[in-house]
Length: 482
Image 1 (cartoon, rainbow, N blue to C red):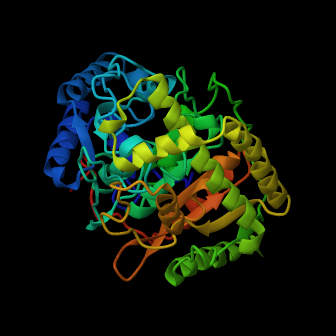
Image 2 (cartoon, helix red, strand yellow):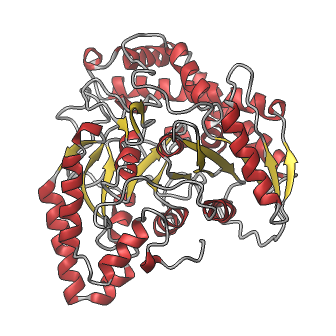
């Protein structure tokens, strides 16, 4: 953490910790915070960030927390985010009272609104009040959040551009100030890409750090992870601490690497493949961050694209096979009517059904080799600094789903975020944060990666870079607005 005083709202534009501090000081009641969040959601409806609002659910939950504040203040104060309104993603969880549809007509009337998860229980224990679901692309298949069933999610920084995907609705809601923090999931960059598009902080935790059960439906062979998109590094660290540990699932919790080194070896990769080139302004931002950290005494170690090229390519191939096979299995096991799906979704399901029976085993067998290759890289460095996006957020419609060309779609995503899948396939933690803005006032995001359990390294370095205040949130948070 950066050591700032939460009660002073020291993050420019505010964050969830600042909002929680205001509620805890009795300057803002939980019910009033919820009322302002719902009002902001209504006022920003054109953004398409939210696909479902349950005002009654949010109001009742906030009222219960107000009663706890009055009757059991010690319990209330122990909740890090007590009274902070938030939203669940329409994919993942699930969260009791909010029936997810994964941005699709495929699941209409099928999913149980009473279903719950270990993760949802920890959100409630942390004090969050949920009042709706954020927009996701159909079954999370895109780096834009524009499902045919609607709404089309737009970037609050420039509504002509995407907010990213698949947690685009979550990122848009946080960037617009509707909520200070929002649940998100990441199977192929889906926390980090939207955070990068919207000038936010997004942490994809180490495999096994965050609970995903008891259904474990969205683990996708271990590549999927859940957490949040945030306004600040301290929010990312605080929610990680509130939700992590004892996942009680198929993956063991990694031991956190409490690296106390004063001088870290930071690998610097600025250029991506000539097939997926990164724009100069984004390379320059990564370079500037490295030089800033070098002034602190850290050693910068140049990493060439060729060192990671094979693992990046393998990650993309494994990701494609796993999501295709998973979708084919869902269609078969749930007897889904594929005619209700978008053409691209149907194509991925068909791709999965056409794969040889051994394809899944081959993909799962290849994953440890990607992890091993990264471990070998981290034998010589403590952290890897890279671009998060190759370009600025793309125009709405850049990831169409009205076609059956799966390879074209995968290629489009790789060109936008060439390194996104690497953290998911390897299981390593990765964090994105904005580090300045381009000529169009769009964020210049960085990505930091560390070995398994290396979240403390990521958070420490990100906090140091964030303190330079090269990015200021243009939209105030509901409940913290002047």
